[in-house]
Image (cartoon, rainbow, N blue to C red; front, top):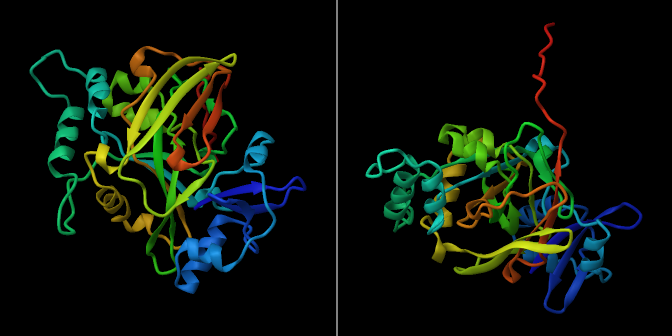
Length: 329
């Protein structure tokens, strides 16, 4: 089952569910978060909650997406309570690009990136419920940086690069007692500044403070062990770059459970009612192939296992060379 959020032509919000036999409005659900809270209160899964409500009117999701009425599949009424975070160097092959970006003069020396990747290979999939090695972790911002499918990804004027990262994101809600609940998974574009990151690996934190998009749909239930997808960039309607990508635990150096543990082990991230969108990483970047996206280009990420494709155009703010002045009270 897939879930999505959309606006009606009149502007009201609704939740849509989709299975092989069609898509429909979920009765009595204004948001996916409200639906999940109701499922927690009833002591049942999200799909069971949707089934218990019956089917509302049929909906044309592709048409709603074309009309710009599809929202993020999970959000929060207060953007400050939605957290965008992620982990890197988690996919087999993901270290190669990072290693070349951060290579040291001494060809025999391992970069910190390669060391981190090898740690994941050796200890990222622990057995017997034990905690494995902790991954690289980064912060992308709160709900202010969460961009709906079809909406522009805006690169700040001071950015040195504006590149896509085709990923899968886990979508979570913290229950009333502080328990993290995974609602599902979504396609994601973990948009980043790779030139800034390449300058110094300690600038990774700066490079990740960019908008990101995910959706249009949320896959409810387990993620397949092997996920195949395609990432492409369109310019004036023509494909200028295209490459397949792989995800799922079969293609990762960490288990999802290990990545989740090392995020939610912090009490800060177990505050009741909060929403978390956690990006699981990628091994495929147009930047690695020397492609430089420009304003007006469209990023497209698709994988049938994750529902409808995700597309966002690139926009660029004016030059941000003027320093921000802080006022004194």
